[in-house]
Length: 348
Image 1: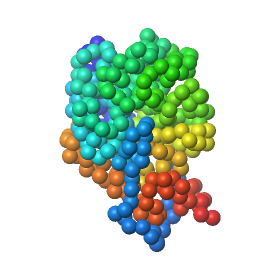
Image 2: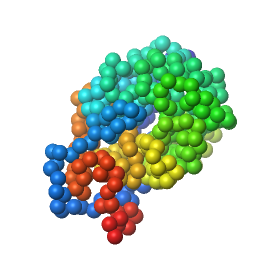
Image 3: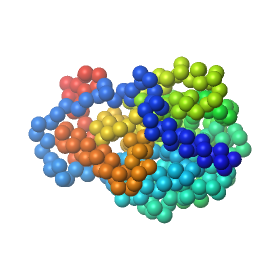
Image 4: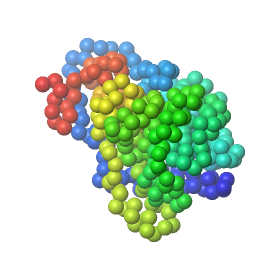
């Protein structure tokens, strides 16, 4: 089991460092949004404030290192570099699936990163489908205690499991089991997809049973059916996965749909987020926090310094965008009308 987890997690990292894992002919939809330049911004660039709050804690910028990996030697290096950089920059950070932590002590350092990220929000992660395979509230609480996490996010990855060798395919009656966890665990619980998106109808069902925030993880970035297609040795699943190259709800559509159903619930926008301009667009249409994964992954395999360089650029791009439309806080960015959506100006 330990060797299997190590191999699978290392393969995931290796594949995600290539462009072969992106969906085909699928974008985030954010390219349909553009900002209307303000030639007279009437603000000082140096006064722009990126700070916000998330799950009861302050962030220096509205950013999250999305859940990526854990359970392998390479994952340990990556997560430590990401944790150190997140602490310095004041970003939230998510862990890869912590199921491996409960099933094996091997490579536990890839999950036990609180000592490197002492003040920022730390989010543990578990596949919701595991509630149909013996996991429950006690397991979730153990994960939170061992990782010292501020929150637990449950990932929904049905299509990934279908393509994955030995995937867990019983997704029946998960909603009441999610509700039980939300009612009995000591930290806020969120839900995330893994690259195919969450729409407003599903988000409302999750909110109604106690979910505190929605990470839409929309289409337009890494496709986990593509990742597993490249891993599987089953010819049928490999061929079938090709038909799902463009599957999923674009990230932009997820944000709009979830916000229309849940006006006040925190939304994390992840799925194909690459720049600070992407972040500004997502925030302007309803997101609260922006999650980055592959944009940081290559740097994280190298050093903390390289991760910090990427983070600095993303923050600078967000500030430039805000300066360009004349807003100095994240709240002002959320309320701007200085943009066009699919060519239609909100200023008109």
